[in-house]
Image (cartoon, rainbow, N blue to C red; front, side, top):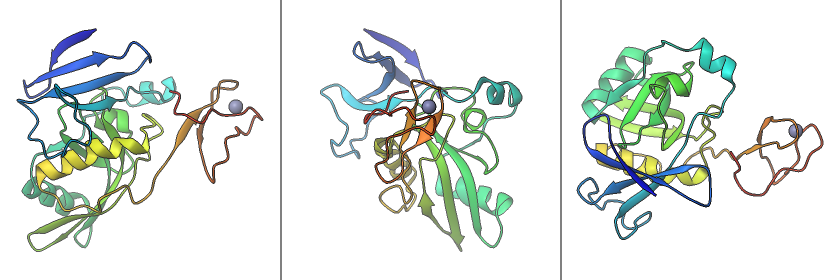
Amino acid sequence: MLTVIRGPDGGAVKMVENSESPWQHVLLGYDQCDRRCHGRVASEEGCIFKSYQYVGPASILERVQGQPSGRLVKGCADIRVWVLENGSNGSATATFTVDSSLGLRLADRHSEHVACAGFRPVLSAGEIVIEVQGSDVEVTSISNQSTGFCPEPSSWAAVSECLERIGLEHPGEFTAVFDFRLCGECGARNLIKDEWFECPCGAELPKHWNF
Ligand SMILES: [Zn+2]
């Protein structure tokens, strides 16, 4: 089942409901896609990116209600300004989210991703380190560390598409990769380390992402 919705910038974004899983995918039609994804995530209709809903604790969601969303940065000049305003010595560590129109939002590193995203679903989220030297702007490290959205390592496809549209130099992959699982027994969100699929409560965790 397809439902057509509009992105924040007015562009057509289709939300695709996948009948086999509870989560949704965002499909950017060819009018939105400049094919820089080189077919990595393309279907016959366009580029498909998985969309992540907030899966963190309700208490955090309540605490951050009303907080402003992250700044939408549309080019390297915007990002340079943000780093100079928010970082020190030409370097800043930020919370980032990629919205369903592939827009990059930056917020203070202590911000919750759900607030940074304006309480909307994301295509990815994590931490980013950006360095500025003169007019050069570069991402030096980036991760999918967001316990609010628990995005998969494969959400890099959306991140790289987003950064390449901006023209921002980046490392070509997440420099720190996080793999999250939900415990079916106690409800804890777990970080998988060293292929160890067991929750501290003793329950076995599934091999596949399960939020
Ligand atoms: Zn557990």
